[in-house]
Image 1 (cartoon, rainbow, N blue to C red):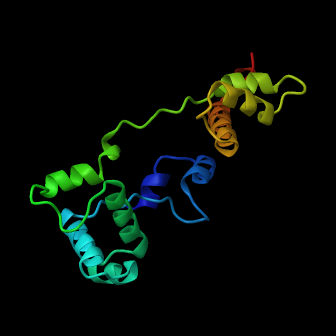
Image 2: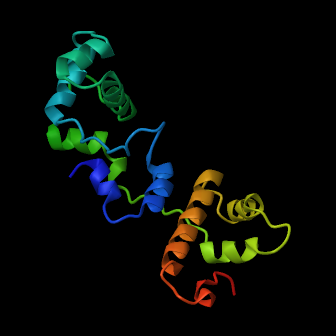
Length: 177
């Protein structure tokens, strides 16, 4: 299944449009994270850089990856203080553990704002999304940036509208208390 087919499956056009603001970059398809280098390729990159003294572009052409991927690989090696030649006790498992140590950590969860409370607060005069975002950010310093905050609310709002679309009585569609 292609990334765009997965992204679009079971979603309404409005929801896809709102979600695409999170997933796209400069109007491109949603990015899919590439698989890691094989340990053999990483050893080749290190050997070509430190033993043969080749540039990142030359290494990329030889191993068949992009220059930026080679740069990232060399950056990980530098951060892990890996040099060439590799120590005799550094097999593939040890090399992988040293290069990708932080990727096994559980990602920090961002506290999301409650969209129902946001909607209720926005009904009051003088209350803006910017004001609510600043209050949210004061309580959650590592929280969402403003655009993501607004998109989170818009997605919830679109979901509420689609839930009420088939209702006969307009009283059932009230989103405020």
